[in-house]
Length: 219
Image 1: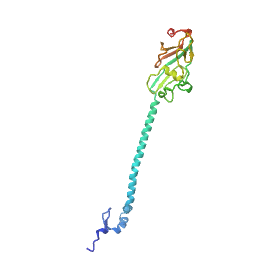
Image 2 (image 1 turned 30 degrees about the vertical axis):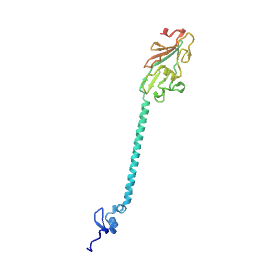
Image 3 (image 1 turned 90 degrees about the horizontal axis):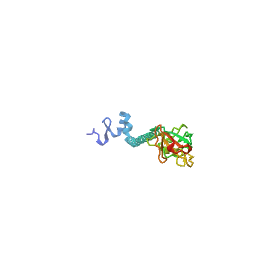
């Protein structure tokens, strides 16, 4: 029995399974398993590294999750910008202003230049920072360029311009006693109390007829 070793003095190598005296275990690791010696001799170091890796994993997941959320939000914002700046309604009514037989020029850049853009209540329908009701030249063509399909009207356009028509004046031109203020839509007279909904290629005339003619007498 003298040739046996007490079990308390012998360990089994976890790598190769060989019984090794406890005092010789470190030398056995270095000689037989040099690549794993450090981890075998200092298991706490490996545990700490693993623990640090596990601690970093949730932070890494959170980081990538935040990046994903940011991408979604940026994409949604970009889609909203594209949507707001997409023309979904584009028509061209025509407007003529006649004052006692003389034609008045409809200014260019209504709804573009600040001096010709007085009412901003419709701005949310405009595209690229412009009013949805505007003129680009002095030809009398009104451009309806909207990101939303809806009814736009003559009085809304006049409000954008900062002008109006009523029984006392027509876009700033006073109506004298005995004269009339008239609106014609495609050749038909409509009361001033009625608004005209714009349509493509529609012809609208705002007029003070010459010689004190009533609106009904103007062809």
